[in-house]
Length: 115
Length: 118
Image 1 (cartoon, rainbow over the protein chains, first blue to last red):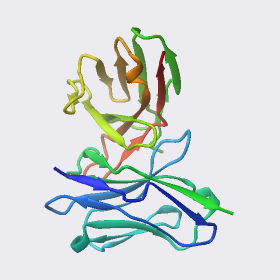
Image 2: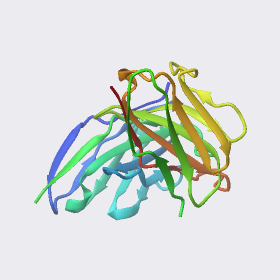
Image 3: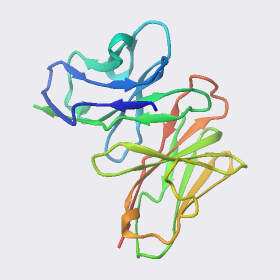
């Protein structure tokens, strides 16, 4: 069965520092991969997704992620974190993607940003 | 565009009562909607997938008689928690897939409903 692991439950970074959130997946074929951000009172927002092609994916708010098949990873990065980036981040995998697909989420990583 | 709303945002009820949560796609039609449950500091767990005009498909372990889902129109799905008990207290999130979205389109998530059963 497919699964997603986010090893870091909570990460704290200083404002302006770089960020990398880890995500590993388990699936036999190439999955569809996503990163979502959840802020209090707001619905999950899609940051970026990978379906095929270029393994480095650019998203909104300055985020990017790199798909590495050999490591079964899809880590999220941002070169310079802003205080407004503090939120919960979820990595997700879908084994098909039609009519929204069926998403399996990781446990989430809570990001805190120090001034 | 692609806004999903949920109502209510918070609900407190007594044990044994039923609670209905609405999920609406405000500016698009959604053939497929999803219901998730999220425990504090935990991931989203898919409960069921609902398709307009047909019965919902429940994930393994989810009691379909307890969590009634109705998707009567292309913009509205409802989740009714019947005979709620304290263990049903949780954060319930819906999402919707655009009918016109096709392969590659994402799910659009509502802000969630916090259910507390006393």
